[in-house]
Length: 92
Image (cartoon, rainbow, N blue to C red; front, side, top):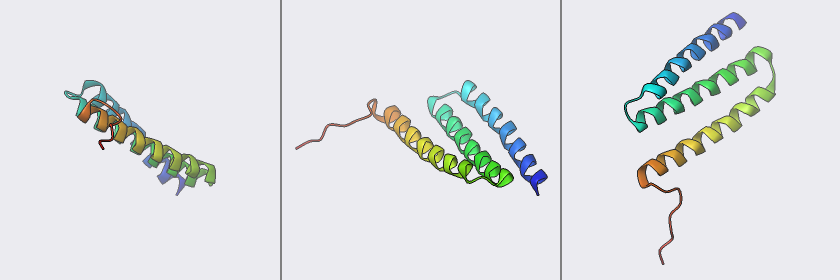
């Protein structure tokens, strides 16, 4: 079963480098943001697979924190691309 997990992790890492190429060559900023988000998601899955391979819960904790950071960064970058600023003034 470990060989299957290693094969999946290797496939995902190779696939992540293809997505990094798309992030480098993307025609628009949105394509680049999406490619970087996909790389973050693939990294998250590889961390979960490593948690199962080595039977260590620490990798799972790191994966949860990484998932939260990936979400926050993606939302912030999307908001910045849409509005041009990260915060908004409250109107009264």
